[in-house]
Length: 370
Ligand SMILES: *Cc1c(COP(=O)(O)O)cnc(C)c1O
Image (tube, rainbow, N blue to C red; front, side, top):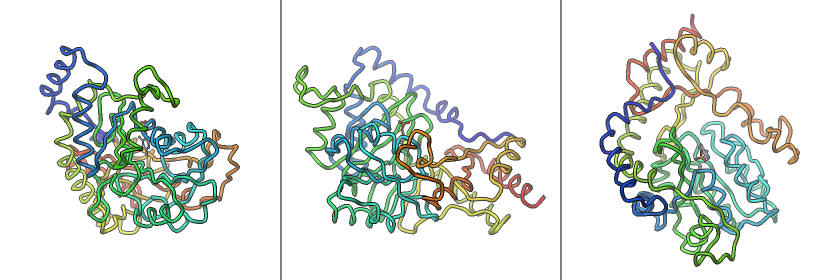
């Protein structure tokens, strides 16, 4: 049996005629940039996030970068980020000429540890970027409380967490802004790059709308430096077809996660650590990530047996060569470094079959128990 990490073909076959028709309509209209499809998606995703503004941008990385600029982050300001995340979280900070300050994670959830946040705050700190890693929201109450006390912006990196909830609140409701990615492999994936920022703050929303069109307002008049960073109509048209299915897809992912956890616990007990889900969270399982011993050997064994897995993320950001100047060294963030050696993500997508999950767990069991 072969079990891919992700298979988008079945989803496409199900929606094929609707998607092709929506693309045909865009091409016939010849309106490709910031038209009715982007407007509709912005409105729908803002509503879905229980906030008043959605701003479509070119990708999830720009969504973070533009959020920082929209919140008034200046060169030299410090921005607190986790190190156990995709590069873009800290890359966006550096692109804004600000300084990423890395904070360790809670080993249970893999999310930034609010207990370690306050020690990282200086008079230069202007924002915190919690990442809702793998589809589970970070501990927002504590993060927002600390942010309020120190007057910091909170930018939720929700690239992996569209549809996640925390104590009944949606992504975007508690932060100053929240950022989504529509990269094809994300839970709501386009057929190319795309991203969106959501916020309840009218002024920041207006700043960000101006920044995505070269900082121009009105057209051809520039008071601030902006970029060309827009979600395009074709991608928005595709996403408008997909978006109504998102909650069902998330439920399928949650069911798949439940299956994995049950099968793994039955077969292996404490040998592997299955995902910890806070009771007050709705985890949407962008990834199903476990902790294991001999991780790289397990990954090679599974590959030989037709099971694809991924390691998110093998090298923490505070130890990346591009950030060497910041002066971090091994041992600075022990939980992050430990997770980077133990975490492995199993195949996860809404259409994953029970028999595939059974096979994956059989092979993991074979590796540890012979
Ligand atoms: C995917 C991702 C991004 C970047 O999104 P792009 O659309 O690929 O630019 C940012 N942060 C996290 C945590 C991600 O997983």
